[in-house]
Length: 399
Ligand code: PMP
Image 1 (spheres, rainbow, N blue to C red):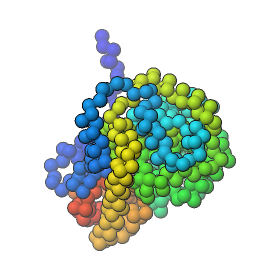
Image 2: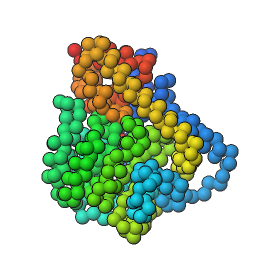
Image 3: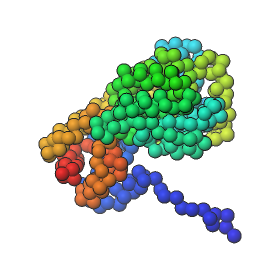
Image 4: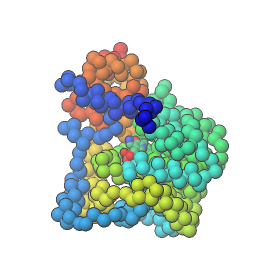
């Protein structure tokens, strides 16, 4: 008899399935806007110069491959804290911030979820509607009830801020609230700094627990500007919160799985206790993180020269996304679809384009342009070379 005879086949990830369909498409003009990856003008995932430099040095050194500490490479976790909070943050000096190297931003979410599941009284998390679908899966997997708060307004293609505040106010005290720091996935609709201040006020008033997901630091306004949510939270009266961060996009290191879980505690003593709990969780999961990606990031951030080069390269990616947004809007207008001007106001790699499922299907069938069924497109997967083609197609299915 088979132990697996009754195991059901579950459907694959719809977004990854899209790439399979794209790969099988024989049309030369095909475009894959379904991905969550930044591509350069040549359609490649960039290898940043600063990263390559460290990589070559590491290869030449050929150091022994021992285990990292359970919570990761110390140079990496320190640099990460400083990037999130700013090196001068009093929280860092007070020893209230503990950072753990994780397996991508996803691993940070998972480990953070496990920590909160054990330590908080309420196993409910509120995520934005819509949110990155894996938020629901990760928190659900560790036993959280996942509820939505109002976020995106399809009419304005921006944030329904009044709706968001009202929903946050109605949450039970002790509920965890998942917040996208910047470059909201999937919508591209972000809060302003003034709106962050208001959200933070409500979180404090209602005794809600903030869990910030920052997967795109530096992809909209700049490294410090995009960290506004974290910085404002740190300056507020809220003394405990969590940040899950990722270098997948900002260092173009997707497959190296470089992320971090950062927990702010009220005191240094509590911070040490929290960190000991996190280490126990990691030990029982993957025991310790892997070396290579963290060594690359630490090598770049630990050298003033390489760090400057990385900042410039990150700036180029950011500027290119802005140029693609502007170009797309301009070309759409030229093709008779001026109603897409909002794409320029959205931030980061993604745009909730407002295209319907039927329009997305037409784009795929008639033009070989692949987008997510919800209408999410990855602006960072466009190129100046195919902007015109995409704009013409989108205009055609919008009529
Ligand atoms: N959070 C959000 C909002 C994301 O978009 C992503 C990546 N798609 C992640 C977390 C996970 O990042 P990583 O690939 O580093 O696990």
